[in-house]
Amino acid sequence: MRLLEGTYGIAVFDKREPEKIITVRLGSPIVIGLGEGENFVSSDVSAIVRHTRDVIYLEDGEAAVIKADSHTVFNLDKERVKKEVNGVEWSIEEVKKGGFEHYMLKEIMEGPNVLLESARGRILDSVGGVKLGGLENVEERVSKIERIVIVGCGSAYYAGLVGKYLLEEWAGIPTDVEIGSELRYRPLELNENSAMLAVSQSGETADTLAALEEVKRKGVFTLGIVNVVGSTIARAVDAGVYNHAGPEIGVASTKAFLSQMEVLALVSLFLARQRRMSFDEGRRISEEILRLPDYVKTIFSQEEKIKYLAYKYASYDNFLYIGRKYQMPIAYEGALKLKEISYIHAEGYGAGEMKHGPIAMINENFPTFAISLFGSVYEKIISNMEEIKARGGPLLALATEGDKRVMDLTEDVVYMPSISEPLAPIISVVPFQLFAYYIGVAKGYNVDKPRNLAKSVTVE
Image (cartoon, rainbow, N blue to C red; front, side, top):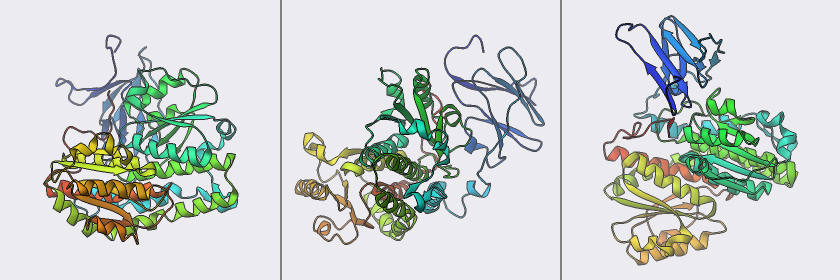
């Protein structure tokens, strides 16, 4: 280990001692699962939770010798280290398919329950907002935040973009969103009244963790939104909020993405009530958050329509997703899901950018999925759709219940219930998850394990 350079998490076998595994860590996560007469080594707890719920996490510079009936942890000075055993909250039943053909579909269908669990015990009518135990001990420090930088990768980054709108509109806090792999390679001006908020399902995302460690060295206040209790990011931040989304086995994030957006809404509401939001406004928003699970169920009632559209469009090689304001990050996420699951080239765009280049790509072989919900930018989106139709581009739309105008532009419409703009992304992403899933199935791909991808990106 003293000779190695770079970041690593290594498990070593020797054919002369087959009963033993030696594992070491520097920067890349190592989790040891403790079973009855069997022990496990992994980089992510979700891989071993079906075998055991007792785990220990190695820290940087530690090594462990694992046998079926024992484990010993050492530091670089060859001294034994006593490690705390962490209990994983997830049950064995949660990591089974439960009668579904794929984990991805099961996890999409778990969306309503995930939203229920992520908000459970956190909505309080008495305060017109939320109670977040993870922030209680640092509430005074949180009240002094004047700027927030959200950091994430992949879907977590897109969730952060939704969080930016929420934090700025509700709490009035200037917010930036950064991709972890980019942030760590450029200067970032932060001071004692700034905070970094790391978003990661696994809590082990390498680039997000590296960015977090960089700002911690500069004394910046750090927060986390993480799904895995005891994970590296959860242990590294000053305070944070757990998702309570349960295990997500499918590589493409679905239910965890919903949970991340909901928790960002809860954090935004918490900060808003500290600052400028009225009691009545806080209670109205919190009551709408409680209705989110039922809103998602209305999407499931259109599952067959979404499946029909997926099979109809599965043969196309390119796709465009467009949205504006709160729905722009959902356009990005919709395109990402399609790329991950079906290997179709897809791009997400802010609809206002169409005339700045992308519209040149539109023809009869380039479909567009437009998010055309009632709200402050509805007329703008309708205008974009009219331009696309005039150029012969196939159109699909996600629209608000009762919108008959959109039917003049396309018959391929999925409807969702009317909901306030800030919370709409938590619902609007679900049709895109199902659409990507069924296109992947139509093409015969393994939607739970897309090629070249891993559930947790633990190396740069």
